[in-house]
Length: 177
Image (tube, rainbow, N blue to C red; front, top):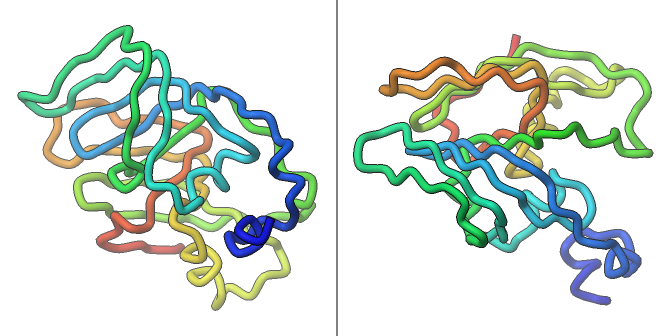
């Protein structure tokens, strides 16, 4: 139980949380991965936990660059979260019960190593705007709503996602409006 508290989990009750297979799309450097990702608890917390790998089922990949593999009907796989640029759940996740009732949206333009994400980030309405950067960067993956993801150097239509998680570790620049 001690190690759960050191990882920031509030109690050992997390042990009893049943694993759920979430349908996800994962934007990486050279491909889009469609799969089911095994998650205990909330998706964002799982993406931000210290384990660098995720377990995937029913994997399909769409290559962005020549030479990248096109895979279909792969029963099981493992992927490194370090290479995830943007992750979205296909089905929306319910808001956490402790979420602030009143949220304010702020425009965000994220420039990654080979992609951009334009959308909005949400903060508690009472939060000081000078603290927004610290609030975003507190975790590796932060939430963006009404997101448009564009791959740089690849001829493809931008990905329009209502909600996704962006990997701040792949940031070149971030602009808040």
